[in-house]
Amino acid sequence: MWSTVGFRIAQAMGITGAAWLSGNIALFSMNVIPSLLRSRTETDLPLTTLVTQWREIYETGKRQNPAIAGLTAASFVYLAVFSRKSSSSSSSSPLLLFRGAPPYSRAGLYASAALLTLSIVPFTLIAMSSTNNALIDVCESQKQRGTGAAGVATDARIEELLQDWVALNRVRSLLPLLASLTGIVVALL
Image (cartoon, rainbow, N blue to C red; front, side, top):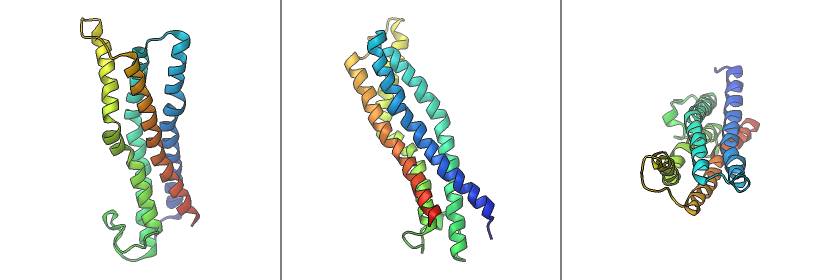
């Protein structure tokens, strides 16, 4: 029999971890980048400087968010495995979570929450990579500009890339939010 205390700790870690991750990701699309773009008009700050600031934000998120997503997803997997174990005597291997489980079982929903949390990684790699790479290229061009490299992208193109990033990042922030909400619903069942 699994530990009730361990189960409750995993629920708290999964639900709050996914909610925190969602808020952390959304913060940059809802506040940080739009504020930087608005402040540009007041300070005459070049968009290339804003892209450099964006890159620092991007690199910080790239370092911290995958680990948080992994720990959060691990909590949900733990919950899925032990929910499955408690409801049947069948194998509780994470690879067999959906085999023979009712479609809306606790184990299946916790496993879905884990997948939703981890889905920020493929979403970033598939949906956001072209925008991220274009913005990184602008940063690299800006660094080399002083050494005689070709000019940087136009302000209109840079602003378009930043706006695209904001929109894509908003969508990405919804994935762990859905995971957190799924965890809450399962905890209340």
